[in-house]
Length: 118
Length: 109
Image (cartoon, rainbow over all chains, first blue to last red; front, top):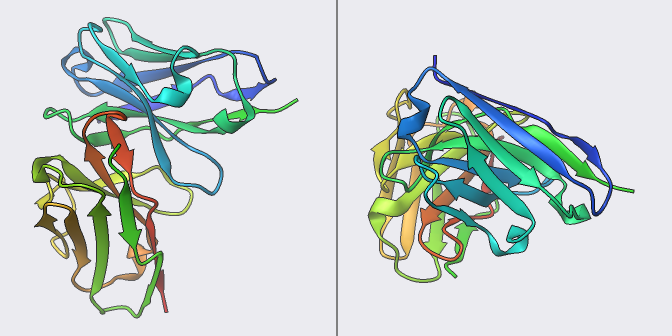
């Protein structure tokens, strides 16, 4: 079945780095744009970044520009390199498949928790 | 930046009642780019409605979406106990490319 599984979360110190991964299965990964969405504890959803199917273009929310880098391979994996982490980056990070029209997210992973604390 | 406002913040209803959730955008948005998600406690979000009124695969027909311009509505025609969740609207635009509303929490009386 169609599935996304995130990994790589954990505890990092302010200014530190983490690399998140998302493994896709059950669909042709290379046909879809992919997205990262995060949710701080007890808060709402916040879009972080997305990347086109060919990796030709990526976009980020302002608060992570210059610190986070989204990438993907040609097989089945999406990545989020997070550098210079801040306390307000603490959240569950979800990998999501962007639907064909590019406007919404039709498949979500279970998420991976990132905690930034000294 | 387009801001989405959802109301009410919390909706408390009895099983079988009709739930009406509102999402208002700070400016007119393309109805093709408005979606709704359901997030049950401890779970990841699930797509309910896309392009304002199209149900996602496997979504029961008691869920429906409507609206245009800046005002959109998610309706649950007959509330079931398993509908306890937070519901988010989301739009696609520019800078930031995607935005979510703050959510409406649906509770069962």
